[in-house]
Each structure stands twice: as C-alpha cells, then as structure tokens.
Length: 394
Image (cartoon, rainbow, N blue to C red; front, side, top):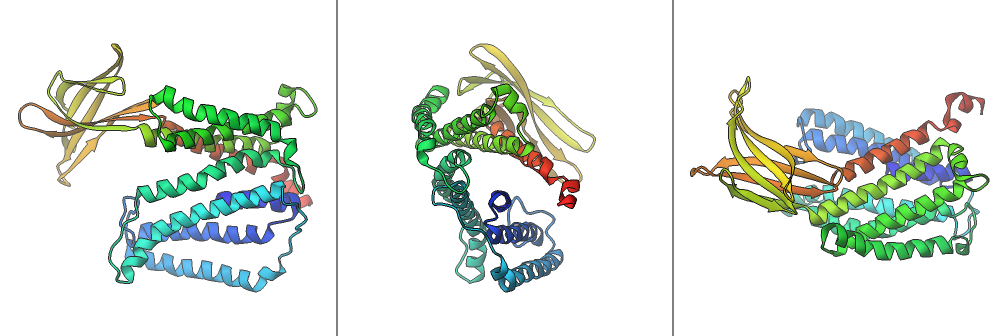
C-alpha cells in the first residue's frame, strides 16, 4: 500500500491526476499498519511473528482501529466526490503504466490480506481450522510479479500524457532478447539446474536491470556527457533508479534461495565429512561452552571447498538453568553469493551427534535489495522540491 501510494503521489504531483487514489491509499496504508499491530499484539493470531500477547491491550488497539478506519472512510465517503483530477492522458502513457502498477500492487496486497485473515474468519464462523502456507503465496506472487517486473522496467521510459511505443521499441526488444537468453543461462551456469520459477525470476531481474540502466543512460546523456549528466540527477531520480534496482536484487535473492537452498539433517561422528553443493563440512568434535546462566556444548565444524579452507563454525546448544529452556545458537558463515549454516542437535548416544547443515545461495541479496529500496525512498524524501522552506513559499 505504501509503495502504491508513493507512485500515486508522483502522478498527482506531476499531472494532477490520481488524487482519489492517493487519498484512499494514504488511508489504507496507515490503517493496515494499525491492523498489523492489532494482529501481533492481541493474541488473535498464533504465529512466530506474534509477541507480548495481551487481549486487554488488543481491545484498545481494536477500538482505535475502528475509529481511525471508520472515521477516515466515512469522511472519504462524504467528501470523496469533491476530489477532482485532471484526466487527459492517453491510453499509452506513464500515467497508465503507473495505474497498472497500482492495480498489481493492490492485487498483491489483497493476496497477503486474504491469506492472513481468511483462516481467522473461517475459524470464527465455525467452519473449522484451515492453514494457508507458503505454496499459496509463492504461486500467487509468481503470477503477479511477472507482469509487474515488465511494467517496472518499461514505465520510466514512457512519457507523461502521451507516447508512442516505437520510441522505445529497440531497447525493449534488445532487453527482451537478453532476458530470454540470460533467464536460462544464469540459473544453469550458477547452479547447474533449471526450474520454472528460477528461469522466470532471472528473467524478471534481467528486464528490470537492463531497462533501468538504459533509462539511466538516456537521462544522463540527454543534453551532455554521461558522467556530467549523472551529477545533474535529482535525488528523486536517483531514488527511483536505486529502488527499482533494489527490487531486482530482492527478486534475485528470493529466486535463488527459494529454488537452490539445501537443508540436510545428518548423523556425524568426529572426523566425518558431509558434502553440500561443493562445500565439505567436517565434524571436529564437541567442546564445553558454559556461560554465566547456562550450560552448553559447542560443535566445531570445519568447512572447505575443493580442498581449500573456507572457515570454521562453532554451533552451540545451551540449557538455561533458571527458565529450564534449551536454545540452539546456529553458526553462520555469510558471503555475497552464499550463506552456510550449522545447527547442533542432540547426542545420539554412540558418540555421534545430530547436526543440521544449510546452504543458501544469494540470500543476503534479499536484505541488500530491501536496504537499496529504503535508500531510494530516503533520497526521494530529501529531494529539493520537498524542502520545508520551498513548501512554505508555495
């Protein structure tokens, strides 16, 4: 909802359109923040994301939620017909691209909202308990993100109000060819395996990145040389480019970690070696690792790749004496292209131990992409035209 609001505001500012969209999305974005707070603090949702459940506090949040959403929508219902927008854009224009973008974002929002609330409603109606898990969201978002990625790449290249596709036909065709080739080549050469979702995800990344870089080049070389042109970019222009590239990075991370992650539960004696995706995990033994308020053991696991030493990980299991709880402290070796995890299980009685080993390719790119999107948003906020002194002058 917040992302759709950001794009809707751009149309309202530039063209005086989408004003009703903007007001409604602002109400929706804030209302959903309150709804999320209610779900995780009231105890109504049983989830690892719920914390400090307090039904009393939940009632206060629910009352505030009703006042805010009800009051906002009531006011919008009474005054919404007074919102006037200029609607003089042609069918093929940036306004239309952003409208389609908002529709897809609202569809994604509806999928998440439905998947979250439907089990609760189903149970309250006495129809029994149902669970909506990861496969539902994976399939739906793959369908939604495919056209979204194409719009994300083409949208910034289209002019406001009216344009012709012939103006961008050549870069789009070249980008689509690269997309078709690299969509198959990247998963195959990086992981030696092809899946439908990996190919589609790689295609999305290529089309977004290729058209974003082309748009950056076109803007920079419009009236001057490339590097001089880059220095004349506004903060909002840099914000848009970085945010779109951040989306590509996140899709890349999700694609490869979702399709090519490996998780193995193994039984290992001292000196045993297990190979996962070219990495050799050798169990060196267990050491005591007691702390001030817990008793623990620490497994030493040495990791090599093709005979070359990579790192040594120490995975711990701790028993806290006061709370009588056992906690696992996983060991992580992170990198730009992969993360390796080791978690210590139980002793199996004959000198062997249960260990859980993970290989997760490009998982850091999910978070790096999120940071890049956040940086893009911050740059947009600090654009010169949003300075308080200029707003007062206007």
